[in-house]
Image (cartoon, rainbow, N blue to C red; front, side, top):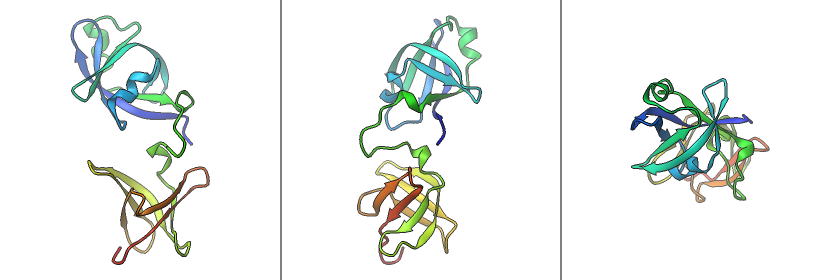
Length: 164
């Protein structure tokens, strides 16, 4: 499992004091406000968060050392990461990044249906796109269809319905 996980992208400057607007890639923008340290781009250069707040589904962040518009502009389009060790997930919760590539098995007979190739994050619920089997499947990520999610063991067990 990857140590660093993408959580958002700096899209623009906010104001004149070095704040930036971050498009969050999490279940809620508030999630990003919990971190005191984030990591920038593929180098995972650590940067200290002085303050963060949610504004219109975006996160406004002020980083230590970024004090003006030019230094904030230099960060535009940067991808932000968290260190998974900084997160305590509730029991049964997992990062979507850990689901990519999981083997998908039929819960009834154990038959391998393919692997999770993509995850569509739709308003009602996520949908797992499964490829590599007989045909592509789109499986809603709800308890009716997902019997077991086990990233540690590398698989997902699903209940298929007629016509799937």
